[in-house]
Amino acid sequence: MSTREHRSGADQATLQWLLSSDPAIRWQALRDLTDAGPAEIAAARAGVEAEGIGARLLGMQGADGTWGGAAWNHGWTSTMHVLTLLREFGLDPESAAARRALEGVRAHVTWRGCGPEECAYHTFFAGEIEPCINGQVAAAGAYFGQDVKGLIERLLGEQLPDGGWNCDAENGSTRSSFNTTICVLEALLEFELDTGPNSVVTTARLRGEEYLLERHLYRRKSTGELIPRDRKQRSDDGSGAPAWTRFAYPTWWHYDLLRGLDYFRRAGTRPGDRMAEAIDLVGSKRDAAGRWPLELRYPGEMPCEIDEPVGRPSRWNTLRALRVLRWYEEQRGEA
Image 1 (cartoon, rainbow, N blue to C red):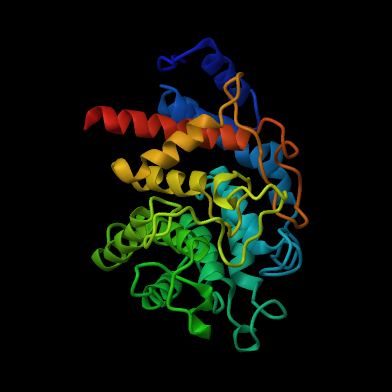
Image 2: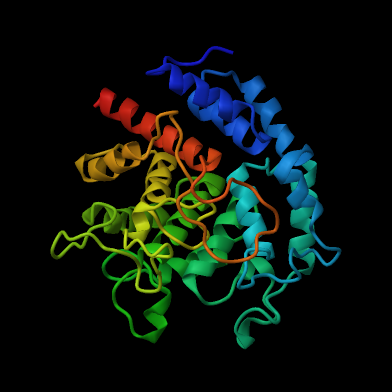
């Protein structure tokens, strides 16, 4: 395997640190940060279902098709949360393990006991009523080739005039939420990647992207001031630092700049000046060894540990930051 030229020995050491990690990280590092060929990448990806954290998560599925006994819960152990992780790990949707797992979900899992009463007998991929939850369900469903057309149509109908989405819209809110918007954008993108270009979906998705870009990914459109956090989000470490500038993994329903930039990278967006400040902030967090720390962990029980403790170098944050910076530099270089 030959790697593209990197800027320093620290970059090479960091790349090797990623390549010697769990298959879920290794295969994405090969794909996004090296010149590895398709066969090598595919072989590494196959390890996601066979070993490491991907295999552990697959082995936790219950006989009733659920993880954590529920479609969704207030921790991070539910069916929705585990499918989100497996999507982010890049479990091959065509693998035998993925097909078995999704068959169990499709055949048995409903929203009974974990959603609004009117949704109790919805099948899992029919979703419930909150767009942030439905966005996560639709993103996982579309990635794994499930029928989420109904959910996508519902989300399209819930887009607000400013271009984004907000779970509080049913309570009268007319302003979008960054948290809800990123969940829905990821769902729309996965749907198009699964089913092909769709002019209606693309139009809605581009409006949602513009909602973020108009705000430079974390500033108020009206004043240009930094937005410290979503109205429902707290600065958990007491530092007062804007929550969206501190990078967690997993992010779950929470938005931050790294998640937003990684979305734009995957969507194939050409970077512009409105992303520059966010890119600079990501780059500023690299330590002397070329790694990024885990800055934040959201409270809640995890199905299994997948990263280092807060404050330690994080392979997930490092992988995502490196590929975002590479995408930005390469795209800007071609402009």
